[in-house]
Amino acid sequence: MNSKILGARKPGYKLAFFATLFVFVVIGLGAFTRLVDAGLGCPDWPGCYGHALWPKSDSDVQRAEQLFPDAPVEHDKTWPEMVHRYVATSLGLFAIALVVIAVRNRGKEQPFKHVLFLLMLVIVQGLFGMWTVTLKLWPQVVTAHLLGGFLTAATLWLLTLRLSGKVWRTAGPGKRKLRKLYPFALLATFVLMLQIALGGWTTSNYADVACPDFPTCQQVWLPEMDFAKGFNLLQSIGPNYLGGTMDNAARVSIHFTHRVGAIVASVFILIVVFRLFTASTLTAAKRLSLITLGVLLLQVGLGISNVVFHFPVSVAVAHNGVGALLLLCMVTILHRTFTVELLR
Image (tube, rainbow, N blue to C red; front, side, top):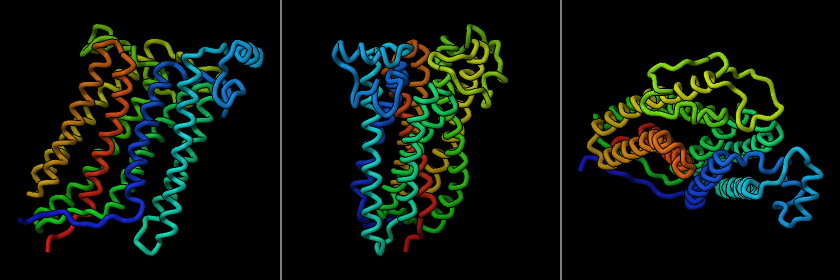
């Protein structure tokens, strides 16, 4: 055998792994909340119409609507918002626990700066969650909040990989090829993050249904588009972005760009997959390349299904989750190609 994987787990590994699984729940709930238009299901923050949970009785609803006359209570929108808030907040407990473990084991090669960054990221995510409500779904904030969720998942998974202690060890030629792959894999991951941002911009501006047909858009290959309005990042704040404020041409430009971005990102990832599969005799490398390919194909299929089946919530939520999973596959490739060692 000319290649293998070695390593010993470090303190905090199991907690980081479980936290990564948990963040997928947070991402899924966030996507569900956004897709059922429950982002303003509670017009105040951190409570809901002044309640720790949400108004339940008729008297509670009456008082709530007196306090917020412009935001009538909709029970099917209050609970998704509050459940998402509490579940997202509990993610901070994981981050704090990981910091405590890192402090207690500082002499055991703990990635202390990594866990501190994670804690700060979770705190910033909490702020963006608040601004999402207080700024009435301002698209810039909603998109940044979505990106922050994906970045949190990637940061937690990278921490898990580092705490696992595992590295690939292979012969000289294989190591050189894998190391050469790292810069391009980093570029492909950046392109993927841009595509995720485009997806966030699409949903935050309610441009999902701007192209209701596939593979054409508005029954033509090049529909009327307004990129200046569609990608105006300096649009003013407020008063309320629920349902979107852009005209159809602007929304079409966003949706169309997201489709083109999906093609570009897929090409970059396919190149990474091919190079990873052929770079080494390491079985784990070939397995990772095939897993990444499978996740990519699933994500593309979900994206197409969103349009074909007229954007069902279940498919749209799955599209978010698999997008995060694809990002984690790329993070794994980055970690493995960066840390690969020479087989002795």
